[in-house]
Each structure stands twice: as structure tokens, then as C-alpha cells.
Image 1 (cartoon, rainbow, N blue to C red):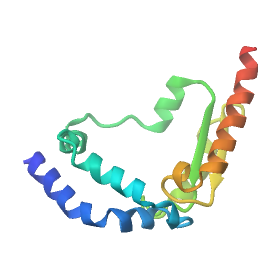
Image 2: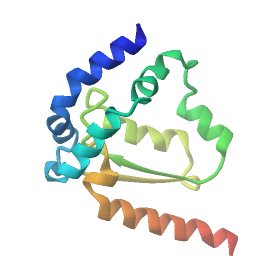
Image 3: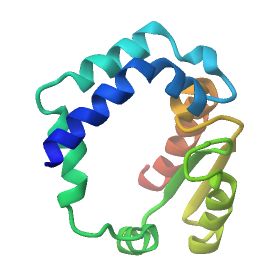
Length: 142
């Protein structure tokens, strides 16, 4: 039943890959190029794709971010697209909540005017922030 539902969902979504991606890239829809849409389509045709999609229904309840952060205890970089339309438009609220959970010493928080995939929609600022954060965190090991 899960496999049939997964196949039906892929069949429904595949013709709309480009428009779906453009909707979740609200600040730079031009980042949705043929290479991206072709790769998503190709991956959705993989024989194991339906199993990956439906495996979420078989997993135990997820652990909260708070639990994961507490167990990890190390430095955390969060690069959040503030205009992510997924999650009923709660990206800015989720962004602000990180600061309530983690200390300033543990957390580097970066909000970008981009959507669901800032690393693709706005790669330059994401890469710049990641490089700066890694360089800063590596100072503890030198």
C-alpha cells in the first residue's frame, strides 16, 4: 500500500518539478535550472526512490532538535532561508527559536533572504558563512 501511494505521489509530482522548485526558491527562482530539475526527475525514477519516500512512515518518532543539540554539545552553524514557504511560513519563527535553545557560544545563526534550499538558491553567502565558521571553529584545534 505504501509503495503504491509513493508511486502515485511521484507520478503526480514529476510533471511539476520545475514549478514546485520555483515556489520554494522565492528569492531566486532562476536558480531552478534544467540541471536541477533533470537531476530531481532522474532521482525520482531510481528503483529505490519509492522505498526512500515511504520509509518515513516506518520510522520511529523523530527526536527533537533540542534533544539532538543537547546530546551533541558541540558548535552548531544554522544557515536558514528566512523565506522558506514550507512549514506554513514559519521559517522566521523557527530561526528565532534556535537562539532560545542554544547559547551564543555554541550557536552561529545566519538568516538569509532565500527559500527552502539556501545552499542552492544563494550559494555565495552560504559558502562564505560556512568557510568563516569552519575557520573560526578550527582555531580551537590549532
